[in-house]
Length: 528
Image (cartoon, rainbow, N blue to C red; front, side, top):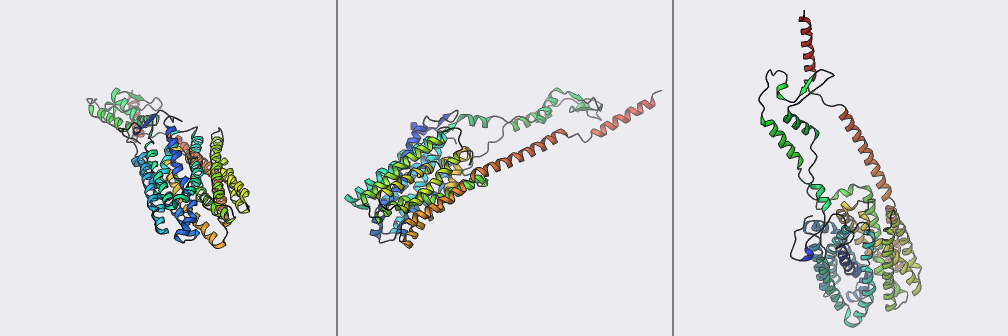
């Protein structure tokens, strides 16, 4: 993508001969840290408003859960739109627009008079803003790093963990002073700083790739041969058959005299060569759905679909669960903060492990997903503060290993590769939208039906187990597809070699040979 230079220093694209693994990428990582904090960090801290919203609007758990559910659904469902807009207008402008939408939705929500107003403001307006802010930021960050991609992305994504650690107690204390409405208003104003983060996202241009595209295509052998014969008027004699083959008009059978040389054939051939040597460059697709033909990507998308069920519900229901066990509000906020701190270590640890070479990253992800399922099952067995604290720390650590790496892993060759990362991320998050819509309300319905918060964690664990099953199929599908493509390529090469081994002969080759033989026979008969 070509970006015109602007007046601001950070508006011009960065040009590198190869992926820099640093440079301005560190500034992009810094911006991504705060974007994570002000998007997912706020979403995961929204549980502190649950009791206040239920009391103010006189609604059930499931009805309040729809606020975050609609927000997550819109955020993931509009992911392809985010990809198209980023490819068309650039990542910076899209992220800045997303920051304005997030802030607008949150500020208006502070004046809501019903839960339906919350559905529109936080669910639709802020949800669209979350999509436009998060996805382009993580995509451009992956383009700035290669060898360090896993580690840098994991560390930068800890922004949401620090946000939950700091926002949950801060918002709880702020509510006691000014109420939940003014606290929500303050959060909306704070989220406006995403616009500043978006302004730091300078596009990146790899010079080497552009040079490769600009190289003229090699002239076809047949065209070179025609050009050479027209310029030199040379002929090739076949010793075996005795037939004289040439492209010169003076040697064509039936011509008794050499015709004057004409410049038209030469000019025609030269024009043909120039046309072939400069093919038109293919247009860049705004959204490439060809990844849907890749079986490994389909399995990975289903993994994301079911794993999303376990991402948000525990953070939303950990405080209500602790309150139902008789734990105070302050201690409940500490549990959520401990989960966030553990998630920081999980993200950093996963990034450090995945940065090692050589290592099959998809298998490390699978192990983390299985352990995350175990952590979700352990929550209902906690009956007091320290038991719940232990489960939260274990869950937070394992959540960090998965949440910080599942989108960057799309850039690995086991899934789609860095070339299709942008489009694949849009389609992948789009598929996740269904789980984002159904996850929290499903957990809320189970809680209202069974009157037990443990049922919400069981539903999350079931989704995570299904996600692990599909994740285990990604690598086998990729290997099978590569083998099939290699077999197809081998067959095509063999067919091409066979075609080259039997060259096409001119239609008059046999006639010329027979005619020459007859003339030789007549000459021998007439000889005395």
